[in-house]
Image (cartoon, rainbow, N blue to C red; front, side, top):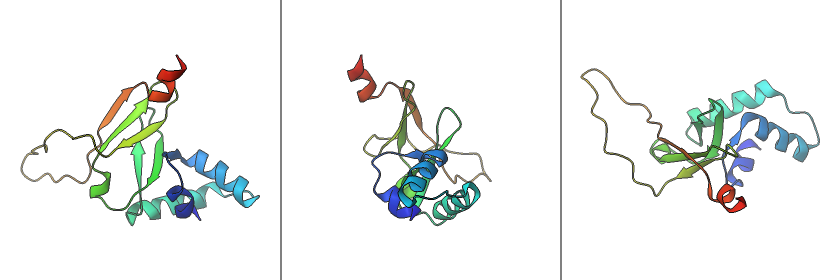
Amino acid sequence: MVLDFLLGQSKSLTHHEIQTHLAKKAHAELDSVTLYRVLEWLTENELIHRIAGADQVWRFSAGAGHHAHEHAHFQCTRCEQVTCFTDVALPRKIKLPEGFQTQEIDFLIKGTCANCNRKN
């Protein structure tokens, strides 16, 4: 149910937003801990990815694979919306000192999104 819901979304959502939407859809209370465990399992199995926003709140988006997550994210400083930019080229690979191994790189761009710019 969680994966199906996230696949139908055009934006990344917080744990709270997912819980609220799914509770309305199911017309029942959704346990917060269970949802957290499901999101962790989906992330570990690379069916979704999580994005750390500038506000330190995780947002979740459907997308398979570790390499699918290696793209830039944009967070609007007004509405807090986080958007995946899969077509924006990332800076070249970072060379780490010997013995260090990269697992994930977060690239967050902050600014004002197109929707908020139109409102002004």
